[in-house]
Amino acid sequence: MKYILVRLGLGIVTIWGAVTAVFLALHAVPGGPASIILQGGAGGGDVNPAAVAALEKELGLDRPLFEQYLTYLGRLVTGDLGNSIKYSSPVTEIIAAPLGNTVVLVVMAVIIGAIVGITFGILAGNWPGSVLDRIISGLLSVAVSTPGFVIAIFLSIYLGTRLGWFPALGFTPLSKGVGPFLYHAFLPSLALSFGFLAMLGRVTRTSILAVRREDWVRTARGMGLAPGRVFRRHVFRNAVNPVITVSGLQIGALLGATVLIEQVFNWPGIGSTLLNAINSRDYPLVQGIVIVFSVVFVLANLIVDLLYRLLDPRVEG
Image 1 (cartoon, rainbow, N blue to C red):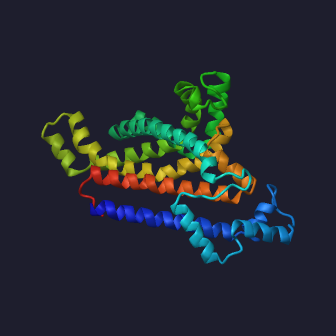
Image 2 (cartoon, rainbow, N blue to C red):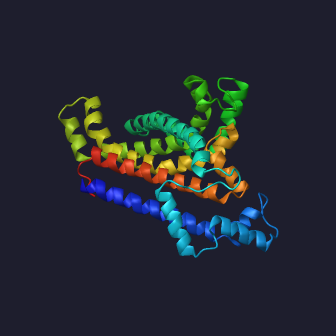
Image 3 (tube, rainbow, N blue to C red):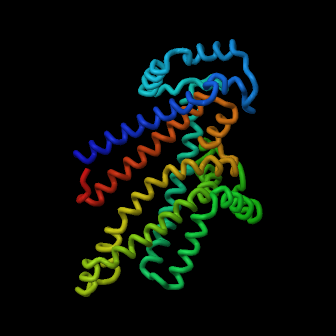
């Protein structure tokens, strides 16, 4: 229980630090947020000081910074992320649907990456130095070093346009059926999963190789236990914790990668919404999306910490 409370406390402090950093960063831009908003999507140029003052008053930016900060925290606690400048609607309403679409991509990418990456890592780790190990290690190296948007373009052109196995672009709302929705989501999810599965595969291989050298594994083999039983009970159970840790850390990378992946596949997710908000200088919308990204990342790592403790009771807070 102490471990859980400590992790929850650290999670709350981390989220507070993230939202504070977002607040300070957006108030540190030259000229202030109001000037940036009034400069329009292209940025640059002079703006009317009277217009800046009027917008600052409307947004509450004319008040002392600490007072703005307290108001900002108070709104966040109640789930109020403010109103979008471009759409004149609450930020929470604007990002709700795109966030759900992105969550689907990330979850599918995690499932694909976990299945393929861990399988590759197990195969390479159990037969180190073999031809299979060399092939898998080479494929994982290519996957981890290739930018996600390059993989996305290749999949869209080859599997989508040339072979026609999946839609190259576009989106089908969930209201038209789960099947069509997931059918359109598969290619973006696959593109998103490459870096994730490569990291998991390499960590799984390294962890298995390290555990296989331990004394208790050699003892289990010397006792005549079946190789499959030795692997399941003594190797994999002790090798899985680093894999879980890396999985949690990679959630942030997956969220960041959605920005370009969604642009390639014309997928209406939170990454595309963030890019459009930046281009239109929609300060409250950018702030809200960055905060949501931060909270999702912290919660994902909190869940990983709890799973780590569940799988290995020896871990202390």
